[in-house]
Amino acid sequence: MRQRKEQRISRAFYIGRFQPYHTGHHTVLSSIADEVDEIVIGIGSAQRSHEVENPFTAGERVVMISRSLKDLDTDYYVIPIEDIQRNAVWVSHVKSMTPHFDLTYTNNPLVYRLFDEAGVMVKRSPMYQRKTYSGTAIRKKMLTGEAWENLVPDAVAHVIKEVKGVERLREVARDDAW
Ligand code: ATP
Ligand code: MG
Image 1 (cartoon, rainbow, N blue to C red):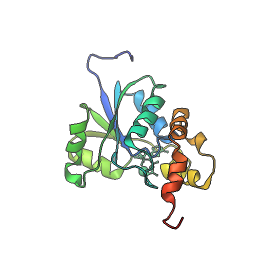
Image 2: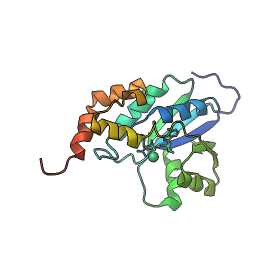
Image 3: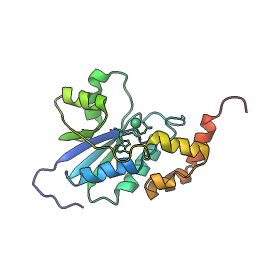
């Protein structure tokens, strides 16, 4: 359990689809962990899985993130959040699913705008070697048979192997003519 610096707990929110959770995300969360007591991680598009862009289930992503964050000196909550097709009330939707948070970190302009309009403090998170560490690039490597394991925390590679994630991705990427 992390030592509390003050009486009041400061809690930050960070959201992504995490298809999969990779070292870029982990680097951002590691630096957020130095600034706040607790982090709420929202797993966006939680209802999606078994798709080329979204191969992993919410449950699988919860395990990937939870196991990876055990290395960090912070307390955290990992919460799946389904899409609602209505940006104007999306922040309320997020808040209905999460513990109270004081601020959000994001580099996504839409997420930034929506939280800002809703009166939530938003800080920009920096990009970490974006060309190397991106979900799209990692899924592409999985499809083409290139090495991807070095781009994710060990715990994530383990979960993906456990659920035969690469085989799943390749199967859902095929067309009907097989
Ligand atoms: P995809 O290519 O599937 O969209 P992604 O790498 O962008 O995957 P997301 O789950 O969409 O991952 O991203 C969650 C948040 O993490 C987004 O705001 C995204 O910009 C940010 N992010 C992604 N890659 C990095 C990185 N290398 N460094 C810092 N932030 C990143
Ligand atoms: Mg993205």
